[in-house]
Image 1 (tube, rainbow over the protein chains, first blue to last red):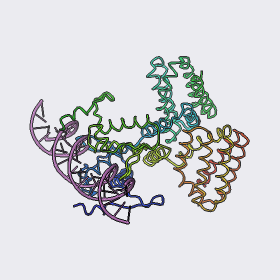
Image 2: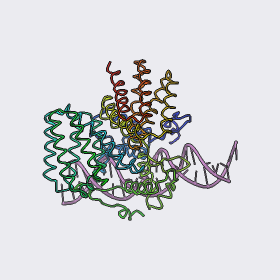
Image 3: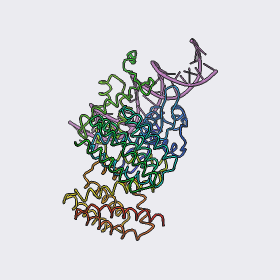
Image 4: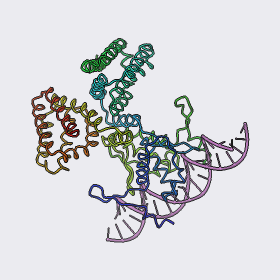
Length: 240
Length: 240
DNA sequence: GGAAATTTGTGCGTATGTATC
DNA sequence: AGATACATACGCACAAATTTC
């Protein structure tokens, strides 16, 4: 029954050597193409048994292929229910970044530098492009942050959301995804900073307000400047 | 023989609901911890059979766990040989970014904007921090690019390498990883741009030379300025 | 250079959890 | 609420490929 297995195998030229691509790799790539082409979110996939029949392979192969796609953030699997397509968001980026950063021991300083480069850009673009609705949202998040300024958990959550909303208002979706990822990564770091120097609480609020003012005034230069100083502050607080 | 399967299952509280964590997820997390703690690269893992025996589960579960780690860029598997630990580099970041970008249809414009923010920062830092050895490398890559300026494949390759070397000279490893990833993503885009407007070839070389001069002179402001104009150029060439 | 040992790849059956009627 | 159907989770056996002697 397995003498046609050779037919399922393909050989690809890769880096000056012939290399075998396994079945589950072929099928996960094939499924990824279909999922991307479909584009829609939360589409129920055929059952593993069904897919196995369609591709002419065992369910094991299908399972391993689906596992890869799950890890790539493209599908979710549920026992007794089935598998569904998922739109990969910034979560998979931040998970990947976190792993690479952990493994290669990148410093908080490096992360903050990158964050600064991206967020200064985001603030400037937000000042130019933010709609009144987006500005409203930024303000309301800021109000929530100030209201919860003594509850460190909530304070940090709204702080990150504030920066995320500004990135969103920049209109650049990649910028937004990256900022979200980095904020996710340095949440812990922000929490520690606030616990160590409570004065940073009021200072952060001041910069946030100035930022909102310059975005409202569509003042790109000041938005960039305040964002730079705001993030520089957090770096210096750690040093001291 | 399987009545102790319940013992292997654990239940974790997650997002206000009890959720089952599957065996392969537990084991992949466990193995990831071990790999990260070990830290060293290219360590040979025990065989799947061995791991199965150690964890008291079937080889299928071990395989699925290893598949996850492989997809995370932490291990590589070889038939007839074994599995080895791998240090996740910028490749996994660019793959992840590519997927998210494709699926969410981010524009070339957005990507270039982010690239600009990061690379301007990198150029400025490189001007401040580049060692003479790093400057030498940047120059030699630039010479290779100019020498191969009529071979589009090589020209693009060395172009990307040039930008990568500058990011490396910035001393910020995260910045370097992200720039590498983005260069990987827009290689195709650079190639198309060069084919459409050959004049961009000489223009690019000019900016590269100015960049090298300002880095040599440790002139942060001009390095930033030239990088900004260099990348702006490539955007405008597409528009026209 | 070939045969044996080793290791990963694939196929299939059973157990378990979930949704539905 | 309970029983049944169904889909995924897990375990075992064999095939294929690579290394080693």
